[in-house]
Every structure is written in structure tokens, then in C-alpha cells.
Image 1 (cartoon, rainbow, N blue to C red):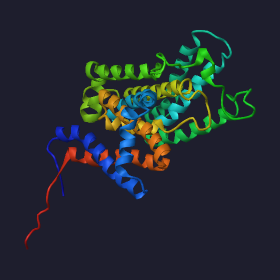
Image 2 (cartoon, one colour; image 1 turned 180 degrees about the horizontal axis):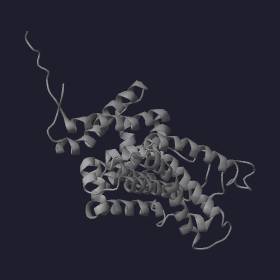
Image 3 (cartoon, rainbow, N blue to C red; image 1 turned 180 degrees about the vertical axis):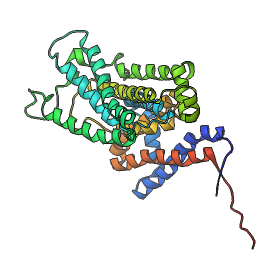
Amino acid sequence: MLEKRPQPSKAWSYATPLVAVLATMLFGGVLFAILGKNPIEAIGTIFWDPLFGEFSFYYRPQLLVKGAPLVLIAIGLSLGFRAGIWNIGAEGQYIMGAIFGAGAGLAFYPLDAWYIFPIMVIAGAFGGWIWATIPAFLKVRFGTNEILVSLMLVYVAEQMLASVSLGLLKNPEGFGFPGSRNFQSYDSGHNAELIAGSGMHWGVVAAFIAVIFAYVLLNRHILGFHIRLTGEAPRAAKFAGVNPARLILFCLGLSGALAGLAGMFEVSGPSGVVSIDFNVGYGFTAIIVAFLGRLHPVGILLAGGLMALTYIGGEIAQSQLGLPAAAIQVFQGMLLFFLLAFDLLTNYRIRAARSEVA
């Protein structure tokens, strides 16, 4: 039976992510064995080959490319989660940031000027911010559930993505194929590598800045204190003079802006084009990253690297071992499942039930 702890266990709080990763490896190995693959080889391919394998020189830079949007989005989500504000629609905000950023860049095409990329950055952040402000406003004004509203807006954003890919942002020289011009051939709007072959681009820089900003905000600023207090003791926050409406607008707006930035950096860099299948689930995966990192900026940075590792390793396992993409997605989902399951032990301990003698 479960018995509530007088105080949350700090030991389990720190141990839960590690235990969850180990459990994911164990049960993931079972899954791979059921699919007829060598579980040790599969796990090794996912976690070892991207770092130390034969072609690791190619895969290592990809860790930064895959990890940057996850960290950037997860940092924004974590601020809201710590305050009890649940933004589940980061995927939609990521999409809108890409649309707004790409639209701003293509509006200047083929002009070559230094200020085009900064305008795209601002437009991308604005696109994500305005999409996140919708559930924030509805919650503040009408008391709606931000979980449902933000999640439903993801599907609206996906339809808008399809619409602009086939219409407004469609490449007029693309021979009728859906999708925008390729930003990798448009110097002023291209989020190119800052150091050739390193995977380092402006999105990676923004992710590191976001980690530092969130750490300083949570530990050195009164607003960060209000965020932590609201999540840990809502009644005490009211007595401390915290304005709930302002906090909701700030947390949701900031998380949306960061998700929008991630989308803009992705569409102008690694992805290169606005297309119907542009979004790959970063907004949802970032939720796993946020909780795996214990909603702590440094923890999120490490968790983002780990999740990027499963992305790269999963792609290697698919090509070399023939594992289906769905199996890799289940493997990643196991991580969140075990994280939440073992997290229960932070607040509860297991006690053997005693049978009472009549």
C-alpha cells in the first residue's frame, strides 16, 4: 500500500530521472526483443553509436540541432508548470512561430540585407506568443481550461500550416509542389551554422541563453519567487500579493514566444522550408524533457541532450536494425510513463499491508 510521506523525499526527487531512464532501457529492450531484434544491440545503437560509434563525427553535431528546439521549448513550459499553469499546446506555438518567421523572411525575398533575419526572429517569437496568449486570455477572462484550449489550438495551427504550404507561402517556382522556398538558398533568411560542421546555429545559442535566463529568473528575481510560490503554495501566493492573471499571461506568453522562436530557427535552418509535414512533435516531446529535467533549467539542458540522443540513435536503429519508427516513439513514451510512475515515490512510500486478525 502507499503511505503519504510527511515531506517529499529529496533522494527520490533526484533519483527518479535516472531510475526512469534505466527502466526505459530495460522494458525497451523487452519491446525490441518482441520485435525480433537483439535488445542489447538496439539499446547500444540508440545510446552509444551517436556518441562513440563509427560515424559519430557526423552524428554529434546533430545532437545540438535536435536538442536546441527541445530545450528552448521545455524552458518556457517549465516556468508555467512550476506555477501550475499547464501549456500543452507548444506544438501549435512552434508551428505558428515557423509560419510567422518564414512569412516575414519571404516578404523581403529576394532582398539581401542584414536586418531580415532579426525581423524573422521577432516575427517568430510574436507568432508563438500570440498563439499562447489565446488560451491565457480565455483563462483569465472566462476561466477556461488552458490545457484543453492550448491543445485544441495545435490542430488549428496544423491546418494553418497546410493552408500556407499550399497557398500563401507556396514557392511560385516549385513546379506545383506544396511548400515554401528553401531558406538554405536565401542567405539573408538562412539560420546557417556559426561554425562549419559543429551543428551550432543561432537556435542553439538561444537555447543556452534561455537556460541562463530561466535560472536567473527563478533564483534571483521576485517574479521567479512568485512563480515558485504559486506552484508550491497557491494560498500563500495570494497573501503575498501575487496577481494570478498577470502570472498566467506572463508564463503562457513567454512559453509561446520561446516555442515560436524554436519553430523559426528550425524552419530557417535545419528544416529549410515550410511544408505540410514540417512539425515533428518537438512541442510534445519537450513536455517529457521538462519533467525529465525536474523543471530545473540545468536539468532541462541535460534532459534535452538525452532526448536528442534518442532521436539520433532511433534514426540509426531504424536504418541499421530495421526497427519501425513507431517502436522508437513507444520507447520515448516509456520514458515519460516511468518518470511519472516513479515520481509517485517522491511523495509516497510503499508499506506492506498488515492483515488484521478478527
